[in-house]
Image (cartoon, rainbow, N blue to C red; front, side, top):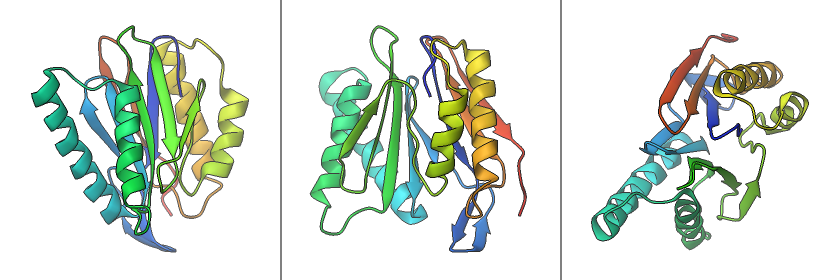
Length: 191
């Protein structure tokens, strides 16, 4: 979700196989650089593999270009990596969030084969996406400050995972501004 020169990216902490919970502290949000994060919902092993490939490609870009990748460029890279594996896809839905050169927030999500969905307000992915759409539409306001954005994202995430039996065990939120990155752990439903 975007705010005024900031963005928030959030996920739940449950890793499960169907209805069985495997882990309650699974990391789904990964830092690419100070102003760019990627969230990978879906199959846990594919998310970790895809993250390692993305870090590798970003480091190659840094060596060649001597600068960090812009969010738009990173989104195109992720899309290309997913599309090249379209016949045996990574079972991941990436959510990409970052701040561009002018500190304008950029967010997008993709399907399993890399078809991008760009948005100006918020994007969602994962098993609780239907309830997340409703909560985010109800709570979103344009040009929110970081503190208000943190509260809105927290409420939307907790309200949504309470309505989905495959999500939960709290939440993990990053609020990114041009100056700082704030991390917040939420306590939630524990079943």
